[in-house]
Length: 217
Ligand SMILES: N[C@@H](CCC(=O)N[C@@H](CS)C(=O)NCC(=O)O)C(=O)O
Image 1 (spheres, rainbow, N blue to C red):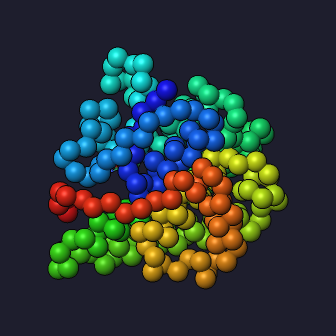
Image 2: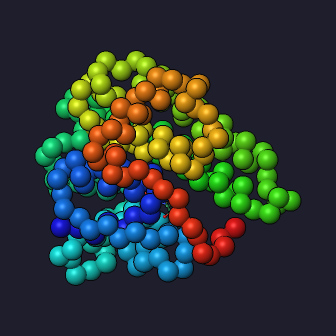
């Protein structure tokens, strides 16, 4: 049994929420705004970021697990069945590469979002353009992988963490960047994303915006 510190728009936390459900692991969701001073994340993660997975039976905050890709790896080791990794070594490595790109797109989107929130005269257009190039490049790579896939999912016909990462970044874009029109540019990516969103674990983790009380930029 676990507690998961999560935020409603977080694509990183969404990957973990989906993984826990797909693996049938019980958990309690502790929803926070990680940017507000009220967040408990610094008590568990020195990097002050969520998601944070806390084993309920633990006595020490040091038992907490953080960084979404590491939490997914940790869950694979502690709860191997059903696996969210393909069986072949090359497919495993490809799944992790997809996750690196999807998480990188999320990182760039978060940086661009905060740049947009600065006072207009303090915003840097070259910095935002740099982040949005990463977003465009990542989506192009993801779209190629989706177009070249052989089965229903990114790697064959079994859901893997590559799909969790891809669905989470696309869902985040749809909610936080509704004017960013990747769906017309990449119709195949849109179809793949819509297919994922019908799955129960995706349907009940659809992101929604949160209000930040504290000003951070
Ligand atoms: N690389 C981290 C990124 C996590 C992340 O950036 N989480 C955001 C919420 S979506 C956060 O907690 N930010 C607070 C901060 O950076 O101080 C992961 O994959 O877990």
